[in-house]
Amino acid sequence: MLPPQLRRPPGPLLAALLATAILAGCFGSDESGISSPDEVRHAYVLLGPDGQTVARAITAASTCPAIAVDGGRPVPMSLRAAAATLPPRPTAYDKSNAVPAEFPVTVCDAPLPAGAARAFIGTRALPMPKAYPRKVLLIGDTGCRMKADGDKSQYQACNDAQQWPFAAIAQAAAAQAPDLVIHVGDYHYRETACPPGNAGCAGSPYGFSWSSWEPDFFAPGAPLLAAAPWILLRGDHETCDRAGQGWWRLLDPRPLAPAQDCNDPANDGIGDYSEPYAVPLGDDTMFVVFDSAVVGNDKLKHSDPQFALYKAQLEQAFALGAGRPNAFFMNHQPILGYNSDGKSKAQPGNAALQSVLDSIVPTVLFPPNVQAVLSGHVHMMQIVSFATPQPPIFIPGNGGTELVPDFTEFPPDNTPVPDAVVAGLLHTASFGFMTLERAASGWTITAFDRAGRPQTTCTLFARKASCTPLAVS
Image (cartoon, rainbow, N blue to C red):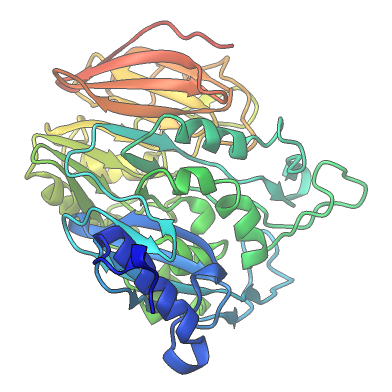
């Protein structure tokens, strides 16, 4: 018999927890197909097309855990990807030594109904989306770089929290109490083995298996994954010949499609692309997600098949964003920002996408409701605004990956975009993140350093950005 204090009907939250405990305790995985919540390694919430909210869990068990929503009876999550050793395939920086990617974890999904207020996996509370988010956190390029590339080889000191500070940045970013997190791409960087004698990365796992994904993103990013739902952009490190297999299993919010999983190189023409989608925020704002992971940097000819594909997808992206007066276009490569030569020279933005955009919206490149562009790829903080009609770009590419040298030399015409006139340029090769907040009119963007100290604050209104002078600590 229940003790007296439990004989009264439990409240919704207690009912959910009791039901979860009963399911976990009375039914093992072998009998019910429901695994214990204690075996869940990571749980997070993603926003996908049309704002569909997906709860995702990564578990060490062979079956999925149960999830309880708004006090309802816990129900099993759906299997997204079973534990597997994926086929070996040549990779971008190690073409002669293809090795299998091992994922000894189960990935599970559960769609969350619109308006849901609470969701639990066992006693783990998931961060829930707000109907009208006010503070959005921006971060990107977070993993620890380990890459063998001839004389351009780079090995970041993954064992040194000062030289690879993603964990501290994630903690400082979570302290901002964001309503939403946007990662602008490039999560996985541990591509090749740490050289013998290199103490900075000694003992680090490498390759495209779960053993690299967890320490590179999920473990250090845990405080921020628990703070708010996420919108995830795909970077060039998540192409099929790099960490694409993990991207599709772990991060993309949409259903996992067999030919799009990057397992077979013959299907890379499918796996390296995906349709744009839009996430509405309230009744006035739309975040448009564009997958440019595999794009190069050279201008595309109109006869190039990639030109036709990207043109169709960009037109689709603009149509998706047309229903709101405030649209933020988000892709990984900095279309309207500066690239880096890796030494200190600023180079014009992505010429490939510029060439396609110019065929849709000549010169200006983006339709008038696009208030700003959010990107990554260049490992620094960068903000570019224009006297001409192009929208400003905000680049939080300084989330932890080894920084590029700060710019000291610019193109002769000092613009990242043909026929555009730069009105303001801020850049710093220091670690940090950004926030995007609603203001009385327009938006406020703040760039923070690695400890969460403000570096600059910008107002964004009517497609123009005005920023305070940069303070670098």
